[in-house]
Length: 473
Image (cartoon, rainbow, N blue to C red; front, side, top):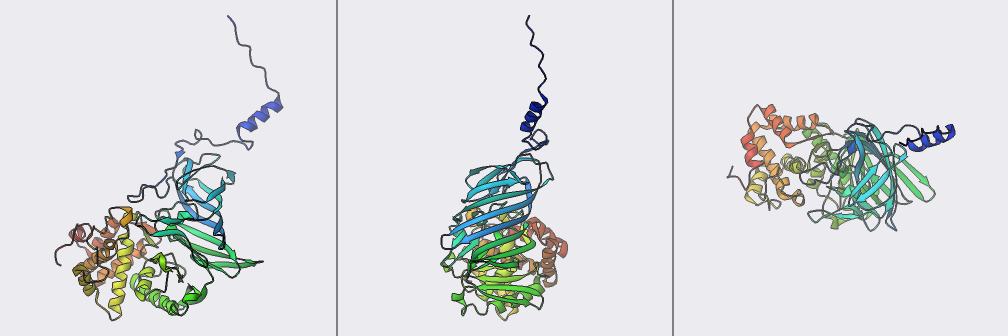
């Protein structure tokens, strides 16, 4: 019988070389086997209307976006530094990114493998990430950002304008200009630094932390420390007229107006101040450290957006529209729905803010507006009974009339049932208790019943969840 000869010892230098090779030359490495339960992160959070939006396995704490935009060519260069913490052990994870070319990706400073499939960017770090681990992802990218077509046919994402660009993100458009966890359930702080040609102004969320000149380029660094859902992030680039002041003497206000609209939008700064002061008295303390507006000249966009701290208007806004978008700073921006099916918690509340404003400023009472919506005589009441406001049937209908107008009708019925004192206490408790967080419809119903001491389930069953138009109230 033959026997295998005993192995001869390796020379010490060769043994060390092989050891370095098996660890990547940098010491011990965590593999999936070293991290119990490590597996790939989910390519979506399972949102009922947008199941592939967002990503599972981690929570973002801050985005640091460094952007360079050339308006003439429409090219964007970007570096996204994303600070996050794992919610479970990960061998890989996803970011949402539409278009653009990824040049480099690193996790905690080490190169990470990347793969693209549709709007999913998958990163595989050099080592598995244990649960509860804080980590930093850096993605370097460039290209011409896309305009994205919504399920309802509208456009969002990166909008190239005659003189610059706008970034609008509801519900999925932010993935067109930076990689991230693009679902409203994962809110984060932001630093957004944009470099543009001299003569342009780049406006974003929060406060202007720094402005610097370098030859023929200008850099603007915007910072927002309050948590923000990614669909509320914005960048607006143009040769804006800038108006700065404070509301009520304390809150910084920054309004950017396209110079072509200077005359038609001249009252906007004063209107923002007036509305913010009124809404603060009505809904409770303003939730952010600054306010303002961006008035652009893109009427074909067709909608305004409640971008955090500075709502975006595609043309000079009416007073009710300013009321609506600024009300979102409380309802939608500070208190953000957990899923898109609870959109009525944004739009119903902002629409009812318009009703309250009209009632407080010598217009129709909220009851009269309710009656006009019920009877179909209000201009915005068409399609009101197509589906229950808390149950949009598809992603393409998340911004349909029932979510707005019938959502406001739900709130009016609650007000009628509990009385004014309790109703406004409910609104202030809602904005206080869920400040900078996420909440859902069940929590709002529970709050209404707790504050009023009443069983309101029948009311919500009819007005919030019922099919068709209820009987005449």
